[in-house]
Amino acid sequence: GYLFFSANPVEVMVENDSIDIEIRINEGKQARVNRVTISGNSRTNDHVAIREIRTRPGQLFNRELLIRTTRELSQLRYFDPETINPDVRPNPADNTTDIEYIVEETSSDQIELSGGYGYGRIMGSLGLSFNNFSLRGLFDKEMWNPVPAGDGQKLALRFQTYGKGYFNYTASFTEPWFGGKKPNSLTVSYYHSSFSNANLYDKSDANYMSFVTDGFTLGMGKRLTWPDDYFTLYQSVKFLLYDLDNYSVFTFGSGTGRFNNFSYTFAFGRNSASAPIYPRFGSEMGMSLELTLPYSSFSNKDYGSMTEDEKYKWVEFYKIKFNTAWYFELADKLVLSTRMQFGYMGAYNNDIGITPFGRFYVGGDGLSGGYNMDGREIIAMRGYDNEVLPPDLDMDDGSELGGTVYTKYTLELRYPLSLNPNSTIYALAYLEAGNTWLSLDDYDPFDIYRTAGIGVRIFMPMFGFLGLDWGYGFDQVPGNAEANGQHFHFSINKSID
Image (cartoon, rainbow, N blue to C red):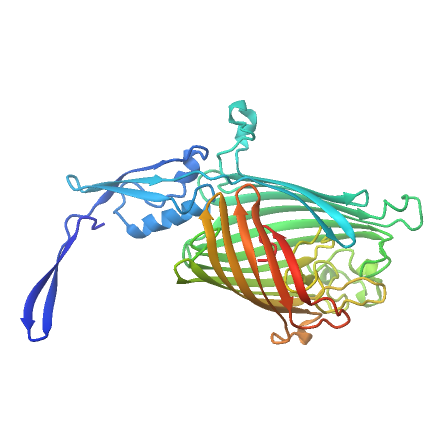
């Protein structure tokens, strides 16, 4: 609160080559915050910005809270982080100060219109993300410009197809301040994916096959104040229904039937990164546990004699994941980023083993192309083809089997070419290593595939993050001589990072 203090250095003794200096401090009276205002938010409603402000009227002036407020406003991604300016206006007459946060709006909505070639097909995608959406504005025609905006909600829609044989779509909505009084977020999402060879066969044909997935997720997030107020807690429940019809290329059973995956996720994280687009210091950390009920423990069935179709009728597993990232500004704007990821998937019942659903697949650009219909998690790794790293790429039926353990290490040097909020561009050079294993018994954190390369990231508010990387994989993948070597990778919205 001592905004009006003064410090005067006084030479109290000079002797030979030494000088004694005494700092005489006049504290003055403590200053309290009087008025707090925000200006420049032409699109974002006042309450969305004000609820992130840590300096409140009546408080003692606190510079730390001033800096923290600047960070929180930049984390919204609605304002240019380079131009957020807290204007402190002290008034010694009554020992108060006014604070005005001057911001500059930047676009936060994003559109994805992309096409690519993978898995022998041309894939098209269309995605829309309204990151400053207003649900209540749906019924107010004056707020449509072109969609209702300003309340800080998020609405995302995405559609992907390569033609008659495949399409998927997702829709999600997030309210970051559910109830309006506390920063407790609510997220609702729906996912549908359908893959078939309908472009070759009719449903009545014996060769017809399909894999349809429907998923629903309900999540609640909360900001914590302990161990400090950078921590968050997120909990969600997810239901996935897999409907297979003669899908013989899958990794088990007859390829026909319905399989249910009902899971609960508990995620604990901390984020003190200085900015969302180009952080220069701070860190990110996340730990999560996803689990299903141990259904087999409630049954007297002999799972050892069951067919695979029966074993996986109700998918059961537990999954532990950990990730961390640290940012260090080595010189002006030159940033070193270090990252590490680890994941493990386990089973409750040895007679059932680890489910083929939801496994880890490592390698490539991280863009699944929609082929994550079995719940698989795609972990990108530059310098290698998509999903090519062990454990198993040559199964008898031609299908792929993902790992149950994975790890990935990244060391990245970044330098910005432009920090303009309408087009943030930075170049990077990286070293990376990782692998995946069939079981924890096979896990060796030093048995890894190595890669190095360079790249560039472009952030445009309308399109999000776009990336282009050249990578060289140093280690040959068994049974796939072309999996490593030189590769160019295109990424969307940090699919690689």
